[in-house]
Length: 288
Image (tube, rainbow, N blue to C red):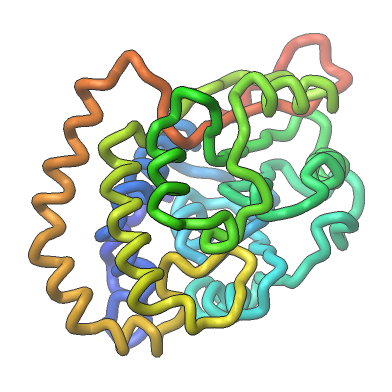
């Protein structure tokens, strides 16, 4: 199955609100560009896949364009409703500490920007390892942290708290996450980062504006309150979003300055790993 255009229409010919937000998100589009390089263009229908931490369903929808048979899961009821509206019924509410799946259920497990939201991240990784088949593929992304990440400091100076993002920790390093996976018996096949300073700074400006003007009035959510959480909220922001559509090309151009910082790490870490199997040769289920 070929990758779908993220701007295609949903039911009734209207582009789903989650995809419209995606089409104007600097970081989400960078994430998908990287995932498109990592994931094969066509997964067999029999390939069983889990997307834990589906949030509003954007990446659950995009991942399904690559084929396979996906289950989307999250902790937050509002996220589950939004995802179900976008991708259909294969969406479940879970306790990440005791996932309701048998050992070795999945061929692929995707955990995109979820670990930083949960207290017992080690237990979460253990559960995900349990549900993945030997030789299966594990895809993980999370925010980066470290003393040289200036945008993280600017975020704190701007008054943006971890609660605004729904985080219980600022992030991870590639070494930390890679080491954890290796101790669980994974073979890490790819370590990468994306989103350097200029993209992060522009996203910070948007987050500050949104939180200050809108979302503090919304109830707490698992993934914070830095973006719209429902179709109704998107409709209430129609005028603001039209204005942002006008200035988005300038934001995109400014984000290209990241290319000057090629010698630095990005603010999001991505790891691809394979769970140990009984075979003597590693299985490359996903090739770059």
